Image 1: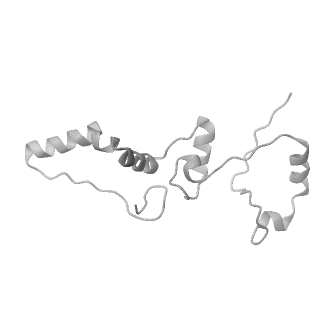
Image 2 (image 1 turned 90 degrees about the vertical axis):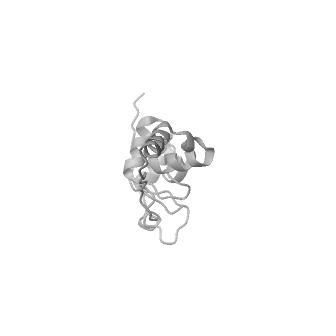
Image 3 (image 1 turned 135 degrees about the vertical axis):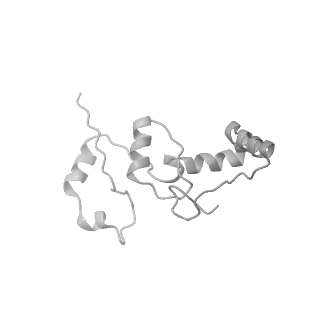
Length: 124
């Protein structure tokens, strides 16, 4: 049996008709394919692709997760999860940096990005 993996990048599935370009355009060929052949839909945003809940996905994270066959938590979400479960505060690299700064009597500069962009930064 032949199989095809068809990724329709940027093609969102939405049951709402208002403001829905796909519904407005009509998709007779796609509708025919979907009625004849097995198919599935996958989540492509938020926690489904390792981003913060409610965060819009993008090609990079979508393709990464499909290729991995599992949720790959993005740095942003991974750090948040580690803060929530406490493992961030036992991170060996962080503890070593704090210890070195304390031993040398120097400051430890910690920086990050602050915006609602969601892929590389967030405001929580």
